[in-house]
Image (cartoon, rainbow, N blue to C red; front, side, top):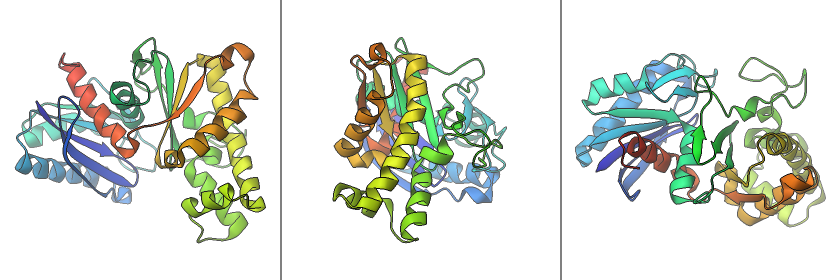
Length: 302
């Protein structure tokens, strides 16, 4: 079986062809251009499907997408203004009508969790959280060996835990949400405020590792907010593992150790026992692998 897999993010749309073993035949990406709205985004996905079908004979298409996704019918239940005009999109139905192929769709962070459970950091783990740190913060819950999506496909919206009541406005319409303080974009804002614009996060982390006092102070402030949110999640779900995804996971062991150390000081002893923090193993390909896994599972081939 060969599948076309597509990951719709706020910044890029990634696409690939994979086989049933999760091997990539090829992959690429294009800018999302989210400001153009939901209709333009659907048209872009349709064009990418055309490109995939020209290169490979596909048996189906599976889509990983930002937003709350009805993973039975492939519909966008809700999306914030990061993707304007996307809420209500009948994603799977429209892509299937365009391609003539069966199409599945799932939330992007759920796909990260599925991909890491299948081929990555969470192999063999029944109870874990997946936290993606990027423009916002996404979450997925794996409980007793199964992805938990809630009563209306919306579980795991951890980026909208309220961290600071009446705090910074969020794209969801509320104030003080976790992702406004602990996301990569929030860290970049802290860096800009301290150092002026122009210092990207890669260079910032180099300063942190070199012991630059100002950089370390900014990092520790951000880390404290990040692990305060994780503290709540650990006490609520008592996982054995937290998988950290998103672009910031490229910081590897340095970030993993910093999160583990900070978090262990905040959680109760029994929650601390054997809790592991791991970086996602497949970086930006986790979502694509998870989309493939979703399709295979739904077809009874997982």
